[in-house]
Picture 1 (cartoon, one colour):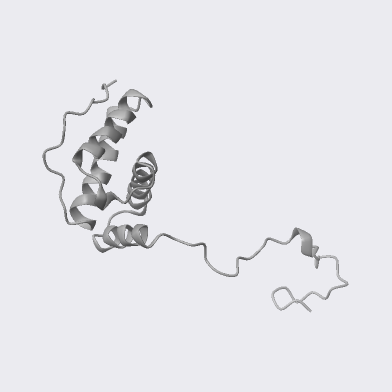
Picture 2: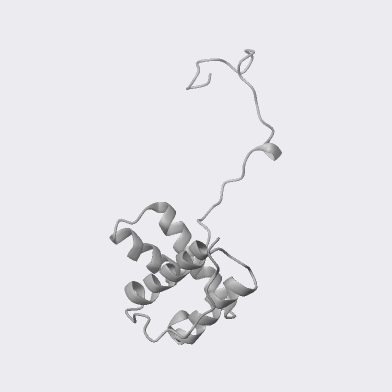
Length: 129
């Protein structure tokens, strides 16, 4: 008898799903970067929106990948400028998208690494539509 519906296995409403078609359960949660967990924690302490968290973490991951997986604490303002300029020139993002990436990186350096961005080099700005 099913505990939820009260039907027995022989009734019409009770159906079995073959084991091969059942969704797999992960035995342990996927590995998450301790650094990105630190970023998420800093965002949550400030009560930012979950969508802001996802966007900021996404931009930070793109920034790290752009620079060959170097740690952001080992990078300078010129590396931030190179990433933002690449967004405008190569990827042709809008001005709002470039600003969001800049804000995510400003948050990373100011709130997480406690090293606010100063003396930003001249970056190629995305053109407003």
